[in-house]
Image (cartoon, rainbow, N blue to C red; front, top):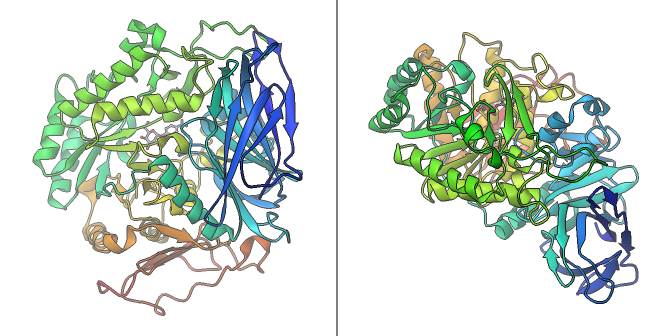
Length: 629
Ligand code: 9PG
């Protein structure tokens, strides 16, 4: 992986396109050491230094001074790379986005039918959806990166605080994009991109190494807690009521739960987090926090800090805190009077939720106060959801000065200021790059469900991301190396119930093995009053194995049909969520090895379900340790 050329695209200013694009080629220049090059009206300084198995490139943009030099608005920087992979890891920008191994021409064209607001949920650059295979923030490649063409590689930005980024793969090659959202540079002004790391070799070890470098640069919070918890969403959904919560609380308190989290459904309107709806009025919410602590557990609560319902008090009292809808291209660039819609949720929220403008100082103050008030009520564990909303394309007060990434990060910093350093922060629906260093725990998948396959399509163009066990499992496995490097991975809840479920016993066993094998962050979201001996014994078992399972994880062969995830404590998960009859190894199945039967290897701690060749299966071995029951 090397940079072949650098181009800077200028943004349209007041409807006029200033499409001046300059290209620089480092051909003949040394790949190391500083070089100043000209790309159109912009100077780019490139500093490249060896870092581990690859090279770190720091780029600084500068608007030159002198006669004829003007302020310029920047759309994006395009870095054309010298590689041509055939198979890569598609990887979207946020928790729920698609994570899948793909040939570079499998572009999922049906995503183009999705409206812009839907594509904006899943991609940093929604205009590429259905047109290219993209790794947002980083792209892992199985091949096509080294001199022989067989080497894999990785191109990944080592931070996301400055800008969003997308690495685009196609038959023509790979282009890394720094998305600059129209920020302007005055003559003499400089602007640094987030550093880019390029490496070639075995994709599995490079994936772990990239995450290690990213964690250092972005100052990750990776040593946070991983409590055994309960959450209300996947059984009670938006109809949750205080009596349900209390019935579960009584049971959880007797079974060693450490965390008890109230999800969506207590608030009067999205945005009004301190106002309960009639079911929870007037004082159930703070009283529940006190009862949860009284039962010896940490009180957790769900919010969506960057959204507001048009019916909320927040939106009515402070229309100036709403982000505006981005005018269609070609229209005049004046501030739109219509609000930017981030999510249509007719069932839970009875309609649209709007985007809040986290570049507005008044909103940031409001967020600090709201979250400090929740902590004062006793809530010290915060699942913040739909966070992508702060970084969708919209018009904001800080336009021209602040990228979408910086807008999101400002919102996250305000939430962290409000809850303080000691509270636990969980990201959900969260762009990964901006959250490193702020969140302790990160949802790394789309929503799970008590059914193996996705049900009816929720959002057009993305049938694979509708809630299902397989959607949550696939992303959690393919993102397992992030665990304890960037944060604690949340693979979404385990649903162990035997009623109100379409999961078979075998499918539940696969999910249990995958939970422990991807870091063992365990939340259940069932009616605990229905649990019997089988569920309680299983949870005891998971807890006893937690210390060996909750460690940084590696995936030697991310492109194998049945990838294996290993921990330094001697744990090993092998999992094939697609399953099916054995196939001859193909290019995408390098190194796939059949799993030994469960009674071989290390029988001391084994969890698993399914059988190779018959459908989905998973097996997890712990080191010889706690004996099997
Ligand atoms: C609460 C839920 C739960 C869940 C979160 C998140 O695209 N959608 O319509 C969509 C709706 C809900 C959703 C994800 C996507 O779930 O992941 O755990 O907290 O919100 O509303």
